[in-house]
Amino acid sequence: MPHPYVLLSAAVSLDGFLDDTGPERLLLSGPADFDRVDEVRASSDAILVGAGTIRSDNPRLLVNSAERRAARVDAGRPAYPLKVTVSGSGDLDPDARFWHTGGEKIVYTTDKGAARAADALRGPAVDVVSTGAELDWRTVLEHLYGVRGVRRLMVEGGGRVHTQLMGQGLADELQLAVAPLFVGQADAPRLFGPGGYPPGRMRLVETRAVGDVVLIRYVPTAPGTGALATAADRRWLGVACELAALCPPSRTAFSVGAVVVAADGTELARGHSREGGDPVAHAEEAALAKIAAGDARLASATVYSSLEPCARRASRPAPCARLILDAGVRRVVTAWREPDTFVAGADGSGLLAAAGADVVVLPEFAERAEAPNRHLLGAG
Ligand SMILES: NC(=O)C1=CN([C@@H]2O[C@H](COP(=O)(O)OP(=O)(O)OC[C@H]3O[C@@H](n4cnc5c(N)ncnc54)[C@H](OP(=O)(O)O)[C@@H]3O)[C@@H](O)[C@H]2O)C=CC1
Ligand SMILES: Nc1c(N[C@@H]2O[C@H](COP(=O)(O)O)[C@@H](O)[C@H]2O)[nH]c(=O)[nH]c1=O
Image 1 (spheres, protein in one colour):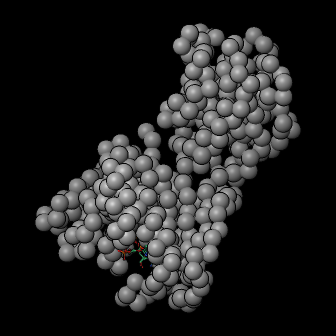
Image 2 (spheres, protein in one colour; image 1 turned 45 degrees about the vertical axis):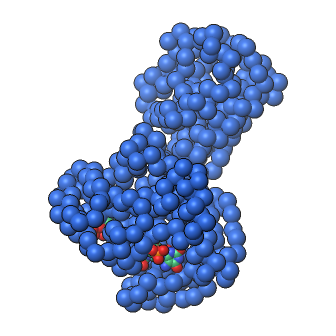
């Protein structure tokens, strides 16, 4: 099930704090940065904060600019984004401004918390949704996408929410505003707490001065592990789909793109069908050929391929599923199961899985993977 694009937004002090220990919300952003945040809110379908932030900041989470609200309405969207919170306890103050301003509201909670939240929030019109015995972030994101139509989710904190979304590999982007001041209190809240995080370095996509604050935008790079897809997996599969568009056209073979990525997010190689003038080259084969055999990183690497790796082929002795296994790779993420166009009943995913590899299929990318192959599918 697809997820919305999840954008984590936070402002931090130079010593890495989200707030001080005083009762008032600490203003880290300056006027120009608050205006930038307003623009990001206006571009989002929903804004999420944890129940802790509602308790400590009593936020409204509005789009403050009348022009931006009008532009949303002109585009057929509600004036204000959906407001979302998460609470395990269901202990929510019905008088908080969150419930009485802006657009529609939804609370994700647990079975236990749902009864309490529904009781507390009898006044304001709020949708209360339980994800089961525990709060499950993937269920939250799938519900927002599938039931509430949210495609872009802005997460404005606080630290516990940011820590979990980053740690579980569910953040597509981090927008960090670094403010030129110190907090200097050991027990002030931090942006990211202790916990497991994706390994390696994130990729810097932008830095920008916004008044006296610096905006830094990072995207995750480290592939997920096992059968669950992460935001970084989605980004890399998107790259594979872009590579498929580079293939020289053919009436007798698919156009496919592939990227091989190490566990720490380092790109090891990429390739596409018929690369380098070889009329029968496959994408995964072309990518793997660029990596030294025995490279120790292959054992924990992920292969992203717009089409599932082939299980049988006439043009070469070994199909790509075999090449992947022989290279030592045990995780493959793909968009599209092979249709019967050239080979009936090809089951590269089955071959990989039978050898113990994790195969993750993300059908939400199938349309992009199929796009350069449309001329083949009509006939097939
Ligand atoms: N500088 C900035 O950009 C921002 C700063 N902040 C600051 O951050 C601080 C608040 O952060 P923090 O205290 O971490 O609060 P959060 O906003 O992260 O909310 C935490 C709460 O969310 C609920 N929750 C989160 N994850 C789960 C889960 N897996 N299961 C069940 N419930 C869950 C719980 O609610 P419950 O307790 O109801 O069970 C928990 O107490 C404030 O000081 C605020 O000023 C906040 C946003 C932005
Ligand atoms: N302090 C702080 C932020 N805090 C965020 O802004 C929310 C309040 O927004 P509003 O309802 O519009 O007043 C608050 O709950 C928290 O999520 N954000 C930032 O970009 N920079 C800052 O310095």
